[in-house]
Amino acid sequence: MTMKAFRVVLVIVCLLVPSLTFAQDLERPKNEAYQGSTSDLAPQPLDPGPLGGAESNVVPGQRLPGFRAASSLGHQVQDSDLRGHWAALLFDEDSSHLGSMGVAEDSLRAMGVALYGFSRAGEGTLRSFAAASHHGMVLLDDPTGEISRLFGMFDDDAEVIRPGLMIVDGNGVVRMVLQGPSLHSDEVLQMIRHTIRRT
Image 1 (cartoon, rainbow, N blue to C red):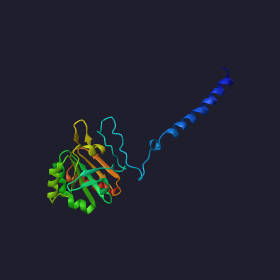
Image 2: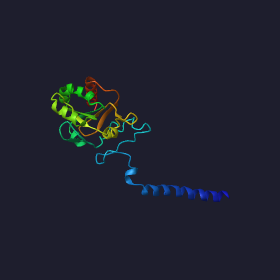
Image 3: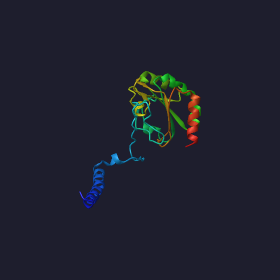
Image 4: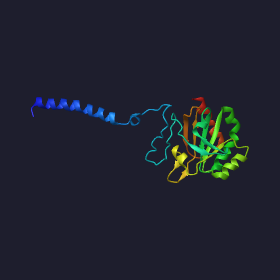
């Protein structure tokens, strides 16, 4: 092939490649190409990664995923019920670990923060929470762990809800996510204060 013929072929290839790429973009669904997020779009959990849910599916700045759960209030609570006020979401396999947070009720109320606890509570535990007037937390039942898994707070290997804390602002935007051992009420209060102050 002569140099002139080679140049002609090269020019044709350079013209075809962008056209093919453009055609592929036209065939791709619009929601697949979209990488950002707006308040009009339903929240999409991030990929949990290779650890099978060991890392949080929800990160600060992302909207809280939709959920609905039986509660100690006697009716179901859903994500829209958390709007209009700050909310602290606690996760733990053992609901008794969450009960100790009731002592923080006055401090949380003064900050305008509602406290919710996700656990495999069961109907009996929900009734006990409802009957105990000293509990400022709304206990939410997650019997299969699916809500906790959606939030990245479920250990698939051990098949338990992992201890964690998620702080959500009044617009339903997650402001802080923490996974780790069960937290003392003083530690939770400190983290909530810090998160609200810097937001």
